[in-house]
Each structure stands twice: as C-alpha cells, then as structure tokens.
Image 1 (cartoon, rainbow, N blue to C red):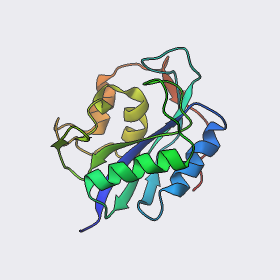
Image 2: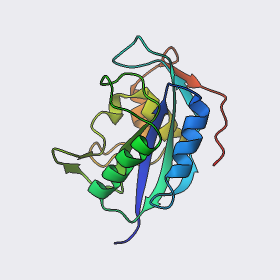
Image 3: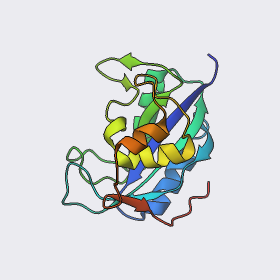
Length: 167
C-alpha cells in the first residue's frame, strides 16, 4: 500500500496536558510518520461542560496502514497511553481522532471518514485550518479555512494556549 496522508486530532484535559500531547505524538511512530503539528489551543469542553478545559492540536502524518487498521492502532495507542473508558464526551487523558485519510470517504459501523463532526467543532477546525488552510474537505468541497470561518467568533470557547509542543 502507498503511504496515505492522514490528519489526526488530539485532545486532553487530565493530568499534565502538554506532556500528554507530547507523549501521544511520540507514540505515533512508527505507524504514523508525523510531518507537521498545529499550534495548541485551549478549549472549553463541549457536550459535557462540568470538566476541565482541554488542550487540542491537529497533526499531519503519513501511514501505510489501511483506514480501519489506522483507527484500531490509534485506539490501541490511547489505551497504551493510559486512557480508560468513561463517560462519552467526558474527561480523558488522551483522545486521538482520525479526521481525514487522504480524500477518502467511508461510512461503516466502525469508521466514518471524514470524521462526521469535525465541521462543527472549533477545537478541530482552528488547529486544522492553521495547519492546512487550503485543504479541501472531501465530502463538503470547501477548504478548512472556509469551514473555520463558518463557525464565526468562537473566542469564548477556544484560544491559543501558548503551549509549545516539540516532538
């Protein structure tokens, strides 16, 4: 299989959040060769509001894994990094979402590509638009910059964290 370009969203709101992101980025190797990492954003929680703020970023990587194998590897990495099952949308040590896999569109019970809620989430679109503003969403046909712009002013929910993430 030829290497695919993937975009991964990462978030954490427990423990040393910056270190959680650093550890997750390092753990991606060798299955995912990280090429670029967005700035880190601090975000208000979504859906379940009674929890600490998140740190979020997006990275671009190359992988030779097939989409479903990539998803399963990311889920295994989350567990290896200490994530335990909990309340949906609740606090978590690390969350790694497969956002985009080349320009593939897929809808199975286990995996939907592009990620089905990415276009409504500022905590995904702000770092993704920073990293790849002209990248076109395979299903919607608009750029990440345009999708980010559709959200309007989200400064009450998301802002640059000032955290530097070195790999």
